Structure formats: structure tokens, C-alpha cells
Image (cartoon, rainbow, N blue to C red; front, side):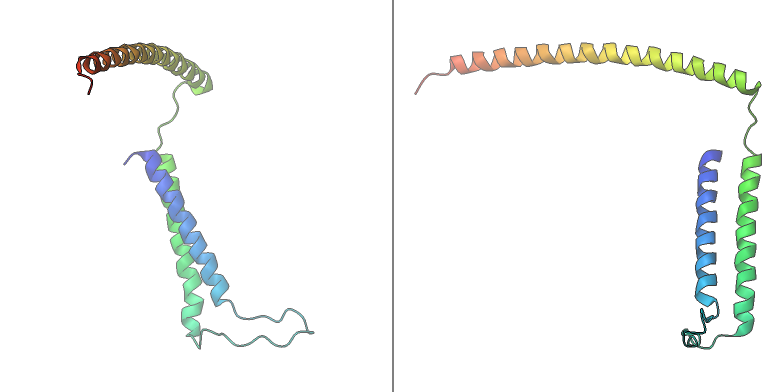
Length: 139
């Protein structure tokens, strides 16, 4: 797999881990009374869970998120450096654009030639059909 695909996969992994981390933190957060005008919030609806597990889970999720971010940083560091700076890159882009335009023109010529040939074949096919129909004896 190329480096760009690996970067895309790692970004997806970081996003997934972050999504799961925030969801878990939200799910496991203790209830808090928003205002004295409201009644006390109910106890944890998920049942009684081990306090040590609830305290340890955010640390594990955070460590996993940091690990994924470090892997992403390592992949970014592995990207090849642009040689020659911005001017060289712009020159290379211009060269590639010129090459792309030339190939595009060649492809357009080939398409036009193919369409012309298709019209000729269709015309010949129509003539062949007409000849076959003229050879049939009327009933």
C-alpha cells in the first residue's frame, strides 16, 4: 500500500478512535444536576459498574488515541520531501499539464477517427441490410 493510502487509513483510524472515545466518555459520565429547579438525576442507568473500570477506561482510550496520532505523525515524516522548493514543483506541474494537454489532444483525434469509422461501418451495414432485403421475394 502506498504512503497516501496509509495516511488515509490512519486518519480514518484516528477519527474512529476519537468518535468511540467521546461516545464512551459521554455514556459513562456521571449524571449532573443542571439546575436546582430540576429534580436530582437518576443513578447510572447502565447498572452499577466497577468504579476502577470507569476510571481506567478514559486512560486506555486516550492512550490508544495518542498511539494512533503518533503513527500518523510517523507516516507524515516518511513522506518524501519536495525537491527544489515551490518553484520546482510549479515547473513540474506545468510540465505535467502540458503533457496532459498533448495526450488529451491525441485522444480527441483518436476518438474523432473512431467515430468516423463507426459511421462508415453503420453506413455499410445499412447498405448490406438493404441489399439483403431487396433479394427477398415478396410474398
